[in-house]
Image 1 (cartoon, rainbow, N blue to C red):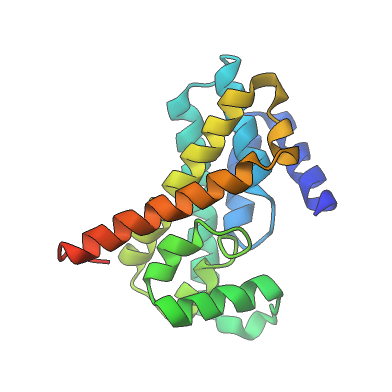
Image 2 (image 1 turned 45 degrees about the horizontal axis):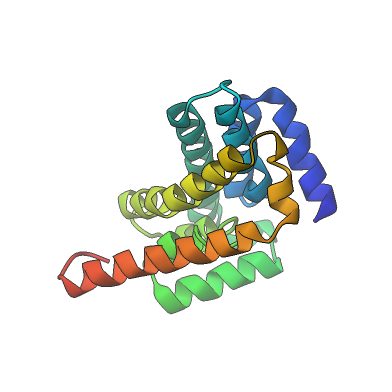
Length: 190
C-alpha cells in the first residue's frame, strides 16, 4: 500500500492533471488509491488553485474514462488476459450477488471500486446502464473525499493518517444504500 500511495503522490506533482491520470488508472483496474488523489484535489480547492467544479469534474471524468477502458477490455477480450487478483475476484462476487447495482455500490467500496468495471464488461452489461451506475456511484465518493481535502487544507495528507476517511466511506455507503433502497421502494429503477 505504501508503494501505491507513493505512486499516487507522484501524480500529484501534475496538479489536476495528476488527479485526472490517477483517477483514470484507478478505475482501469490499477490500484492507485483515490483516498490520496481526491483529498489533494480538495487541497487545490482550499488554496484557490482549482474550483470545486474543476476538481470534481476532473476526478469524475478521469475515473469514468478509466472505468470505460476496463469495461471495454473485459467486454471485448474477456478474462483471457490472465488477470487474477483478490480485488477482481471480490468484484466478480459482488457483481454475481448484486447484479448491475453492484457497479453503483462497488464504486463506494475500497478494493472493489478499482475492479468493478471488469465483471460488468464480462457480463456484457448494457453500456448506458454501466456508465450511469458508474458515474452515480463515483459521485458521492468523489465529493466526500474532495470535501475532506478542503477541510484539511494544507494538511490534506493528514486525512490518510486519521481514521476520518473510514467514517466518510461508511457514511457515503450508508447514504447511497438508503437512496437506492428508497428509490426501489417507490418503484424506481435500481
